[in-house]
Image 1 (tube, one colour):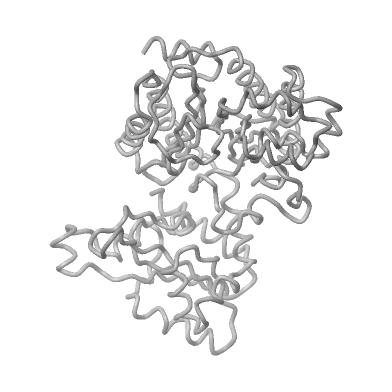
Image 2: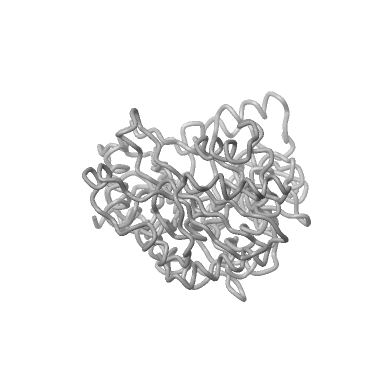
Length: 464
């Protein structure tokens, strides 16, 4: 947790951002793996962490925008709780650390809200992503469960995003800590990338580092020789010489801030000529994109320039052709990079996407494209100082997608389809770094960059 002054300030900023009414911020509860006594590792709701800071299940905060009063609802531990989980400071004493003095049992929550409901006051809540909180809000507000998600407060959503989007010095420090853990995870993966190693053993080692140094991995680890599958969580393979291992993984530190890196390395550190060519193009796209990032530039434009590097690089090795501007307008490079260039990052690895990806990544000025590839960009809005985001260009050879475009004559003026079958067993290459927008550009969130050039990766693998 940060100091109580941090949470008091955040809630005051939130109240000033709202017009009137009551804000309801439910925390998360525990979720059972296969029976109630065997829960998944608890993860608090990120907005609850941001404004209240308590990493405890079954809590709910209510903030009265008009009076300024703040309430925390939750139950003290029973004797059975203490026997099985150990003693903890009282909830009231823990709330002192977050600056909330009105602490009440959960049974009192509905009674506080009833007068507001009867008088027609606006009750604001964020769109729930867990059924438990959807049912809780249904009961509290007296509406059907399937209508809860439709009635979330857009005013509150935009206010929360505005506050959480720009990271202050305290948050950047936490993100750097998460970056350090992620750095060690990826460095170990490179060192283990030898013929005969199992993907599962490497992924498990990385997860062990995340748990030993922080909370957990920030998302399920992607580690596979089949890098053309963008979110490949299958770790059944055995590493083979001549193939590439794509690893997209990150850590969550003890205060729940995330990191997210991707490196693609040749098994055993021995690259083929084709692998070197594609890796070089992706690295050029990564470095060029990072050079463009600065306050005021739409990230949509940076994504487009990454496509330009992909197009020009693939054209140089005979896989694409034609005019760059025409190809970019048609989205032709998306055949090889069907995902967006990056996303916001913070307390969530895809920061605040539970509040609505479009609300986080777009605004009234810049809306989401409908063109294949461009429409997958999660963050398109103008960048501002303090934004933390990922930069992750890639080139993939997805046989099914290539065949579809070939058979339907999609962008055939720009793609050398006859050359692509030779790459059907290539896989894919993605490279990803985390950056924070500075007054005149950007910098790495974690200052030490993972090995990223072919020479650096070869040396890391061979010297291990």
